[in-house]
Image (cartoon, rainbow, N blue to C red):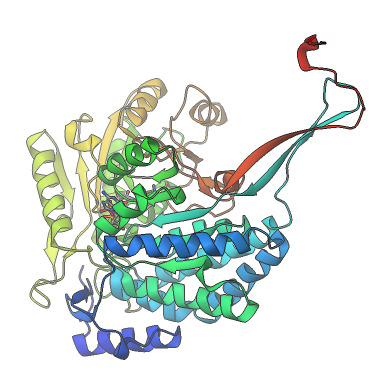
Length: 511
Ligand code: NAD
């Protein structure tokens, strides 16, 4: 049910100016020809100049110069920069959250959650700055020491998607900075104000701790700026988050010049609902994972695979909950579903619902556009539930909108096969009261995804674990755990203090 009156454009512009200004971005003196839109009502918030591909050389060169200094700063001292940045994020949580809502339409609590995630990764990275451990292993030769050391890698190019307009950058940047790397960021062209405000806060921290200014640089621009970064031999690691289409272009280009990449691409995430599942928990977990962020998370739940004995009940409780979802102004209290990012997303959703119907499905809840009469250029939809008998072609695609397909299964083996029979491999979960079933799903014959959960939805990961997925999701891992390895180069060292020269494997080469 649509609930809110949408705010006026003047109100949105005022909030954007105020939030950006508080973070140190003076919008009044920064104008260009590229409009920054708000999905809340279609208003233009501001117009900005864009960088071009020709600017990339100079920016990368400056990042390389800064790297030569930054790599020699002790890691715990690098951590002090990230620590200061984290505190500034805390101070400006409301400002950044407002910009995220204004530019990408997240509801306030999710926008604040995104900033909280940035603060969390800073805390993690500060701890990591004293834990960049290398191993020491026994040498087979007497009087020798064998060990591994980890060194800063170089310039990291971060390309990010609209739906996590600043958290993805901070996952990469907080870790890259403590690892001694410098960062060039090409944010989504749909969220440049969030990017500028986030980068300005980091720049303030850089000034305060006296780090080189160019350890962090921002390139707001079109995909061709991202392409130039991808092709630049001065960029040691490209961390690219976005659609599988983008990753398919980026991956081979980086590989072609023997660069490193972390690819974080599309998902098509499923939850298996077993007969023993707590169906109350399922309803709550599924609604957040499927309808939250208006279905625009990489980890959004897009498929429920429910045992035939419970599938009707699951569909009924989801339809009921979907009918009560408050849709509208994401910054208004009580709203749970904000707008889609643009009209193309609405077009993709409509086309997918048509295809699902053609392929034998039935739309059992939602699917209609709402609030059109208040704002013709804003795209609000009722999240949809579609009952399918089989996993047809449309179900195997990621449609970046709130469509949840519900499919029946008979055996756990079949449920796992359905879960795995899509090209993407990001997130998955099983709702079950049967521990053996949960273990099978978690095990080598279970879900083939990078994220596998039990009794919780597919979205809303914590920063402490490694984040990423398999197959067309790209195989990258970032954020917590040992993901930092990707941001450093490893050297294996053999130190001989024996005064002799015994060769490995007993080779005899005496002359
Ligand atoms: P997108 O692919 O349209 O754009 C992402 C970024 O890539 C933008 O900054 C864009 O300018 C840039 N880009 C596009 N083509 C490029 C090219 N050829 N070379 C270099 N850069 C290029 O994605 P989007 O619409 O912003 O985001 C939605 C998609 O992102 C969904 O598929 C979603 O699943 C995915 N996503 C994945 C993750 C993850 O961690 N796996 C996280 C968030 C979003």
